[in-house]
Amino acid sequence: MIGAARRLLADGRRIVCFSGAGLSAESGIATFRDATEGLWAKYDPTVLASPEGFAADPQLVIDWYASRRRTVAEAQPNPAHTALAGRDDIVNVTQNVDDLLHRAGAEPIIQLHGRLDADRCHGECGHWEVVSLSEPPGLRDCPDCGQPMRPAVVWFGEALPPQQWKAAEQACRDCDTLLVIGTSAIVYPAAGLIGLAKSAGARIIVVNPQRTEAGRIADVEVLGPAGEVVPELLG
Ligand code: BV8
Image (cartoon, rainbow, N blue to C red; front, side, top):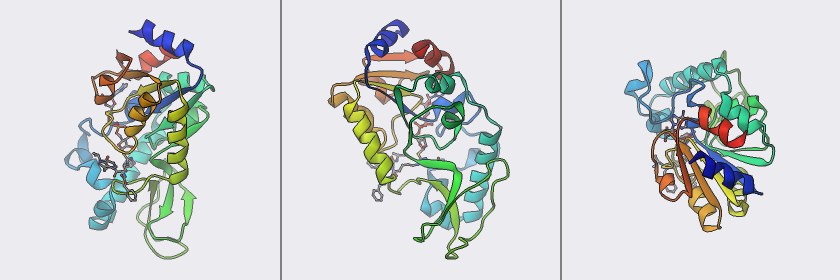
């Protein structure tokens, strides 16, 4: 399967990489659907990562993000991030909110679900600021309008940033090869990009240790961890 995927990538002239939490799993960052260990095992991320969850218990949500931020601060890009960074002909469209692709030097990156290393006002004033991942801020109010501050990520039930979404749609409509890495392909509208690329005639390569919905429409499905497979595919 790796050989067939390598051949498709060698023929590709407009390649997009669509990634999810599995891309960062080997950097020690828990995916959304793996059982989270310890303190967070009893909470549902889709509830914590939502305006309703934040309204119900803002302190719990901010503590959850602080814990995730510290994990990302201690994490390093893995060989999959580095292999993608070595290919400036590949456009990265990621669902991930960590900064590991940036730290690996990958360019360009379209972050569909925002970024963990920034906070924004939960109100309408537009206040936005970069935050420390190693010493994350606690629960606090917006310095401009007094509404609560919250991570600059897209929560369930919130719209994706229009500019990033438009750029991702365009890239997936135009590509001739879509490399799908480490996603369960169940979070929409992001997961819809796979079908969009397919219907635009792109070849689909999926890299995941497990079979997924995306694998069903893939031209090639490589079952294995990103940290091992992606360097082999792109090297
Ligand atoms: C919206 C940021 C509307 C926060 C995240 C149809 C259309 C539109 C919306 C919906 C729809 N159906 C349902 C919805 C609602 C919802 C949704 O999709 N729900 C799901 C649960 C069904 N979608 C939304 O709410 C979206 N917003 O639609 O708004 C709107 C429009 C206008 C105006 C107002 C509102 C917003 C979705 C974004 C949510 N935010 N993240 C944060 O991080 O805290 S999503 C979150 O899930 C992460 O970003 C994550 O990346 C993403 C997707 O999950 P995956 O990345 O796939 O991760 P997962 O754990 O699922 O899978 C990991 C995979 O890796 C597995 O397959 C595993 O096998 C694999 N793996 C493991 N190890 C490795 C590996 N692969 C490779 N190597 C390894 N070593």
